[in-house]
Length: 127
Length: 110
Figure 1 (cartoon, each protein chain N blue to C red):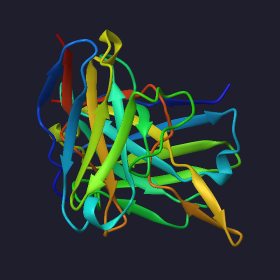
Figure 2: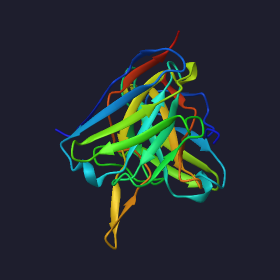
Figure 3: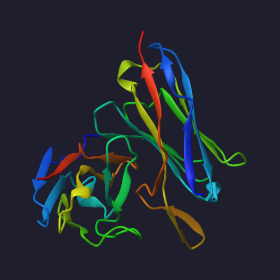
Figure 4: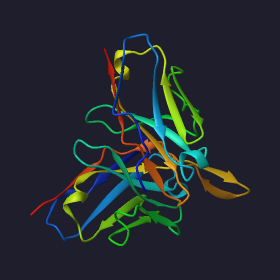
């Protein structure tokens, strides 16, 4: 079954850290770029970060740059999001999402949308 | 990166057609054919409805169509049905190698 399952959310105090995980199954995880997207309660979707299939390229939203770090372990089919210096405004449901790709002249080229989503893990930053 | 601009709400009667706009800049919507659309029912994860401006994934009804003109993309839902009532989001690739979402549009079937 093709799926993404997030974990690691919880309640954390401002300024503390948390690491989220996203376990992939049913597809060749190591071929796919991956995103984190978040959604604050009652609000819209907010893109957070993308990591390339091999982990060598990463991009971040300005709101998390310098505080969040995305990584992956292709041997474990798992995506991670290390979140440091958390703020109240980071409170959200965090989704991992898969980015499709094309092979162009043997190079994996990202297609810029999200074709598979997990169910999300809730992070609450509160004292 | 500012969010793309969508109307907060759009409504229509069953069977009618509605269109949701998504306005950005030449650095995102206008500069790339990488606009996608998602719908999200309450308590559920988003679902891809349109990608690369006008392409439908397998399994998505042909009642959904997408287009783009300049810095504005649009999603049209034809033959509106009760099950189409949801929140809709657009997304675009940007010149900074990031992605950006619209603020979301609540579609109500009257």
